[in-house]
Length: 457
DNA sequence: GCATGATCATGC
DNA sequence: GCATGATCATGC
Image (tube, rainbow, N blue to C red; front, side, top):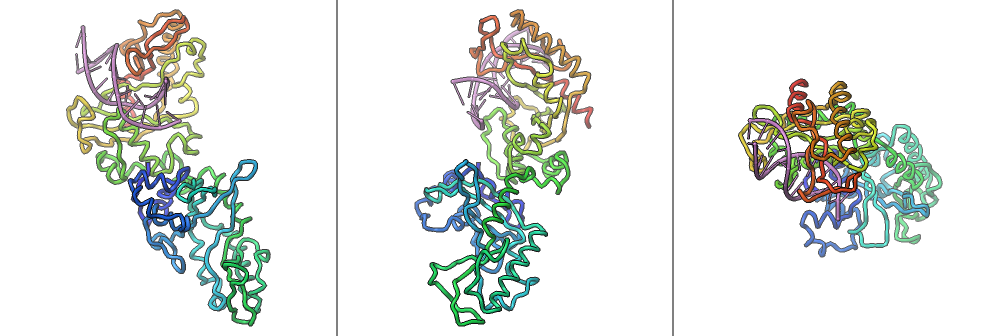
């Protein structure tokens, strides 16, 4: 699911937009956004960087003085990776920054040079170089990046070394081997493509400033290992704060607004419409599914969406995974799904409210569905270890003796009950007794959820 | 109106 | 092809 719109004044949003290409190629983006008709007009002769600029950022980019995304101060760099024999990905070539004009550069000082603005904030887009059309090349990593302070000191030394060599009339002797991170790489058509230099009559090869392959290799390593690559945790604090920060502009506002503001489109007929909506929203804002994001994976966050009636109670109870009849009879309480979530994780409840009477939610106008509240939740210890465990034990016991018609109903247990969950009434599962039974699952009672929400506010 | 049974688009 | 994360439908 690719979006087309991004904020070209906001580096994070430019990054977010670029990240959509990770594990995808330009052709997929074109087809998804129904621009496939222009595929034929885009020849593969263009540089891949230019294709990214045109197709993804829809932006007329320049090549010289100013950063590509001028208002955000972001420079775009599209650069290839290669696959090593052992299968790992590695930098294929140096990152070329800007041509060196031997005559102009000698009057520049480090403090005011034209290179630094290009290094302040770079959107690096790494793709895997393969022998196939450019539109089919797969992008592997997209990230905002800039050299660290320590790296900048070395780059400064390198820069001065290169400038001094030109001032000594030795531009023709420049070599990438001279320097550490910043190199003066050949940029001519061939060895005979030479230009004049200010302090010698000897012509020198055209050269450009570049970040050397070895340096880029360490940058790539650092970025691909970085667990906080997707979210800048230090910016906003812990994941609770990040979630609150992410949702806060949309609290007490309609789903219609949230969708329009983020250009999200979802089939209204999907029963888990709200879940899809929040999934897409989080993906957009934080760069990945909530289950996939490193910081959230670590915290074992389980997302659930809830819809409240106008009286503030949920219309529906909450379902979980199907009961595996042949497995539950040997299951330990410690391994039970809902208990496990509580052990080292928590729920993220995204709560909607509909202030009108309705029968089917899909008939309610999106402007009447309000994002009411976002909260983290854990089942209180007693409720889990006694009441819900009682439900689990009862269910496990009944399955072990082959009784599939007397599971606990909503009135038998304060917290939860057992109810069908299947494709239809003919969707059966084999039991330990060898018979076939309708598929069912554990639920949490709507009335209990209502209580928990009230308790939290 | 509530409890329970039945169902469905989506994604892996 | 099937589980998932829910909502929809029905009957008392």
